[in-house]
Amino acid sequence: MMRLLVFLFLASNLCLGQNEFTIPLAKANSALALPSMAVHDGVVYAAYRSFDLLRFSSQLQVVAYDLNARKELQHVTISVPKVHGARASEGLFLSEDGQTLAYTELHEPGLILLLATKNLAEIRRSTALPFTPQDHQRMFAGFDGDQLCLGSNYYQYGKPEVSGLRFIRLRVSDLKPGSDAKIAGVTQDTSSAIVWQPLKKTTWVNRPTVGGLWEQYTESGEKTGQELTHRQGVSNGAIALGDGKLVAFYGNMIAKGSVVSYADHREEELELPCAAHQYGRSSDPAYVGGICTTEKDVLPEAWGNKVLSSQFLLIKADGPKITWHHDMDFLDVADGNEMDTGVQNGAPLLYRVGSKLLIVAPTKSPDLAVYEVPLPE
Image 1 (cartoon, one colour):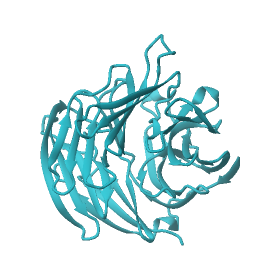
Image 2: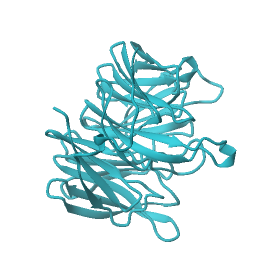
Image 3: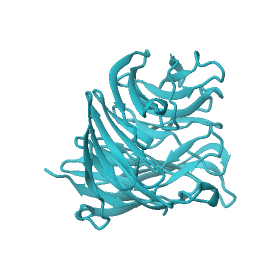
Image 4: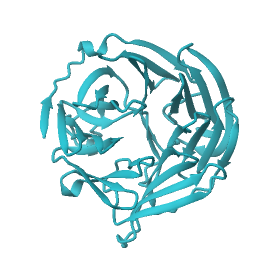
């Protein structure tokens, strides 16, 4: 493994050279719900719940915003199942033709909602989730043609032979299951999000009990031979880039971590003086998003592990190399304190426009921050 050591100085000129503006989000409350986002042809879409003074929510706000003209195009309010307290979404995705949005909440009361991008009108919805109490770490992985892709870490206690990763495809036409497959005996051992690429029909599985091993499997349960082993730090997620490529994030309790780039049995590591976490969804496979945190080093029972500072990292996967960084709050919400509840972080959206990358990020304020970052030639 090749290693590079980076010392991040917060005043580094990597923070300079970008333009910045904000997108207002009416009735947003980042302490209770975070926006899920998608982007197509210069328009960013954001969907988020709004709440009353008693922390009840029965409305979903959906906004379409033109990034070039810097103006709101549409804003609709949609009635959704009533909840009380914080609510996590499993994501907002666009169909391949850019005509349909799909929004999901995959814990009871569940919701799968399809909207037309041309006017944000509701096309179809379902509140009947295809899950059981054995489905943990539920995820929405977007579209695969005319199907929606849902996954879970299916675990039946005392029966490891029937436990495994579960992959469900719902027909867009009626939101009913078109297929339901399971890789028996292969489960995600950590709380990291499942790394599934439906279009490639592959998934990566993390197994910390054998040295922080990430292994790639096909949906039918066959090993592809691609694997990454990292023996230092705790796994904080990974991003699959296709063709056997993976970017993995690591950190520990004393603010030391790394980013590891893997491609076809070759690993390169970028060591960091902070804990690195996966943080962002990118339309450009050359770049991924992460966030670096430093935490107060005291015992958890004394209310320790509080994040003292956090910086967003724009990472060039080939290297890996930090192209740009900027102070950013590490945001997340959870439906509750139980193991099988929804969890959502404030992952920014990374969108390539010519020679610059737009980073659209949720904030503690009722708006999105947009950073325009020139990319190196």
